[in-house]
Length: 150
Image (cartoon, rainbow, N blue to C red):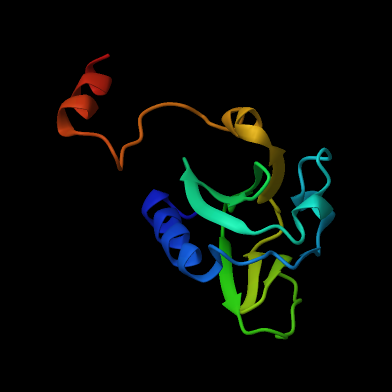
């Protein structure tokens, strides 16, 4: 799975492309990917992206109306930015999120299919996915040392 620095770079680069834009459509190519049923994935379509964050090793698309799409890439999971109208598909393709200026394609090599997409309503739903622990990319040396000693 991509490690935290990789996920951080994904979040930064993705934010430049999608914040302030509407998520036009979500195409799921493998149904195992979506791990939540309520709210339905369709409610995300047409929503404006207000931010892109990292929650541990997950990417969070913050949408208007207190809605969140949480992507967990897992082993060999990658994101690809494609030009508008580009062909989506192939064995590794799991999903595509269409925006006005392009498509975000989620892929995963291999056959295990461990990646996931959660659709969550409200901060409470998002907190349920937070594994807790120390944010190592945001902590001081003193905080890190204290956590190690505990």
